[in-house]
Image 1 (cartoon, each protein chain N blue to C red):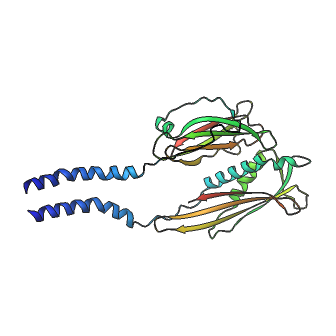
Image 2: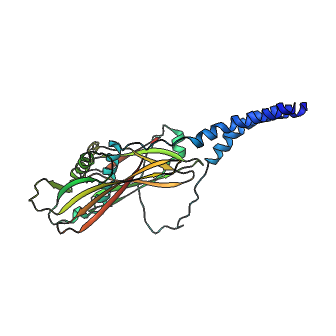
Length: 154
Length: 146
């Protein structure tokens, strides 16, 4: 009879602990890839921060003449950076505060450039990739007048 | 001996019930907050009207107040919304600001975007947005549970 009771308790414990052990031993899923929606969010936030500062309003003859350089991908992943580049340009253009020129010979008030970096952390319990988007506004002399940064965790 | 068996049989269902309860309680935590009793900043409050279709979301992410300021060159509206979680559980939601011009027409470019956000139990947070251009005069904030 004692054996039956003991095995009853044992089975109960096994039943209770098994799901916990499964969760504990499960391999964490890989991070999700970056999406177009992330680019939209980042572009919206960074342009909002730039507009909020009022730097573009300080030019002598508004709207500010801007040259847009490419967004550089410094991650190990393939990424079409023209997607975020276009979203940044649309948001800047729609603000009415800038005039983006494509002519490299034309003098401008500011030059804007972007960079994407990433770090990967595997704690065993979770795997996270953090993308850092940096946007820099420089004057023609090369001084950075504004730097914006936004992170996306995946 | 029979009594012992009965006891084990009686306790087993309770153990099954207790486990999720214990696990559930560990997920329950809330934020304590301290701030200046008489804030030095002056808020320009905005009168708002609300349409509540999700009571659970309204409890876990309730709009407390809306204030605004003019930013940039002074011609852009910035809106800040205070959100409070009245529950003890963390809440995940997404929010989106839509902007309208002086004719109440929706500004479509740049397209309004959903932003994911998390709020701990009892926590108060602020979400904000800057108008996409000086033509944007009014806003609409949408919240949805994630």
